[in-house]
Structures are given as structure tokens and as C-alpha cells.
Length: 206
Image 1 (cartoon, rainbow, N blue to C red):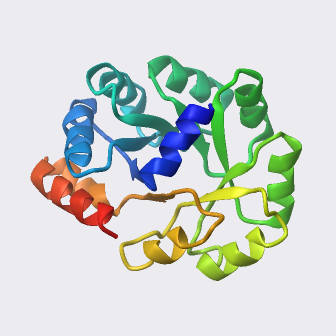
Image 2 (cartoon, one colour):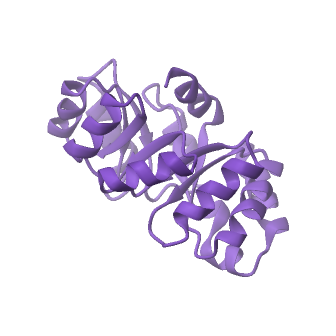
């Protein structure tokens, strides 16, 4: 788990992508990687997620691969079996968190209140997703939330854009940010891999 967490820290930006056709998964992740973003959190918001994970894991082993929008233990099992190296959930689901910690699977559950941070700590977690970041108060809220919990790191996600990501990454408590702007659904639908690579390259310079 520590090795994967270190890769997330090194990546700094984790593209959060929603794929409707698993045939797009490999060229999409290749385009992101060519732009300097060799990471992907593939969300379980579509039926193509599991097969997308499987294809990327098989063909692009150097891509840091996670599963997002994980709402159940069953989905954790599917994601890990398909090749996901870490699990991300929008909220704090005790069943999902407990299963992951008991099976040595890196899990980053979503939190946006002190009580939820303490739930994470009570489960032995010190890296949490701050979600929905902008809607929950943005950088100011995250600064306030981080103050009492010096040993906790956060991965803000939700409303992260090129205009605000630098503010988040400047916080000592932030290990990486999740963002979806570099691989929007329209670009994926149009198979505009060159533009995705260009935006990814631009993002790495932020």
C-alpha cells in the first residue's frame, strides 16, 4: 500500500475518468500518459468500468490505476480483480473501508467533516479524499479541516480545475488532487486523444 501511496504523491494529479466504451480505455490512458499523467481513477459510474480497468492493467502496466465511485464491497472485489491498485469512494462507507483494510487494499474514502476524518482515523487511515472539494468550502475549508489533524493527508476532488488546483497543491496536507477536466466525456466520445494529451501536458505544468 505504501508503494501505491507514494506513486499517488509523486503523480500529484490523478485524472478521474468515466468511460462508456471499454475500447476507449487504453487509448485514453495512453494519451494521458503521453501528456505526463500516468495515472487514472476509472469511475464505476458505467458498466464499462470493470472491463476498462482490465484492459488498461493488461496493456499499460506502468499506469497507476485506481477505481473510483466504489460504493460496495462487491465493487471493490470486481475492481481489484480487474487490476485496480487502489480504491476511492465518494463517502465513508464502513463496510468498504473495513474490507479494504482487512485485505491490505489501499482505500481513500471521501470526507468533508471533522467527524468523518475521525472515522477514518478510527479505521487506521491517514489519507482521505476531500469531497466534494469546491462545494464543501474549497481551500479555506480544507485548511480549517487540516488544522486539528496534522497527521492526515487529503486528496481533494470535485470542482478542481486549472484555475484552482495550484492553491490546493500548495497546502501541506494535500498529497494529490483528483480532476476530470483533462479527459472530459466529449473528448473521449470524439476520441480526441491528441487534445487529451495536450491538456494533460498543460496540467503537468500547473
